[in-house]
Length: 378
Image 1 (cartoon, rainbow, N blue to C red):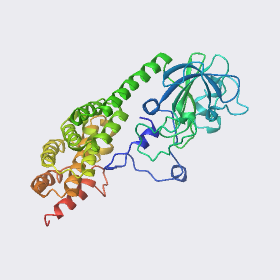
Image 2: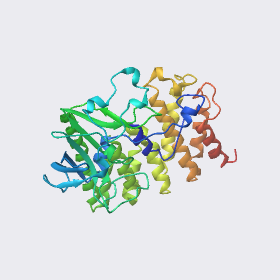
Image 3: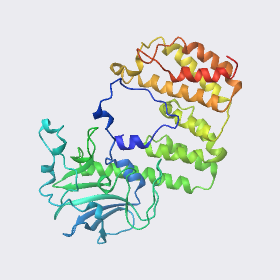
């Protein structure tokens, strides 16, 4: 996942641990995540995916192929957001620095809209006027007077791919801090089109699921989409299951038993807490975590959270950490007093675990245990 969409999809329970300890300098303090082209975001939310050719008039394009949507080949579109930057000229490959020493020279990065001419094409991912994104965690303002970029975060510059001389170009923020700038894509047009079709198939499946009238069958289809592995299918289906009544709740509880989805369990639990779903299985799930940590803690060493020398092995305990924390949080928020004996068992095991960081000052699980056990007078 690229930075722009990583910023979009924020875990509901917000378990945060620093990946490194550093002194903040003015450079890092002014750093910001900026928009980048992200294919899955663009395809997922696009009502139209069109291949355009320039007409000779800046900002004016002719549709040469319709991958998705209504405008058919020959239709004309005015897209001011893709009007080439004045005075920009030359081949796109010449707008990209090739000297490795210029990577840090941001003045050498092309940040405008690139020039294109006869024979060039642009693939654009658009939302028709008034169409909301299928899924977005942000309060997206819906405009009714013009085409909108499909990218959740960004404008038409980051909702388009330029094709010239058989090579593909996109706009990314490759360094933070740093601007969004033109780069050459490291894939062929054939590979790109296969990826577009794969996401479109999932998007169509989401539309079919939403249109299913039977609540149980709709929830079954949404749960299958959650298991697809596509981050937008997961986020969108989670949002819909959260609003899916008893059938949605049952599907969410079933997803919590799937260990292949461990990294998403905190989000599932967050959805259940939002709906004030109290379930005896929360205590059972915490017992599973007690069993896991009783073995795992003997293999971990102080500072294991940031031990990148053992990645991806450390990813598993990290995911168990977020699941454990989310379960404790759910037990506290929902006041599940029947689970307190299980919490005490977990507390005894966790007390023997090594610290996440060598000089650990805070630990969210320890803090949550204090809150939960305080309800029992301890």
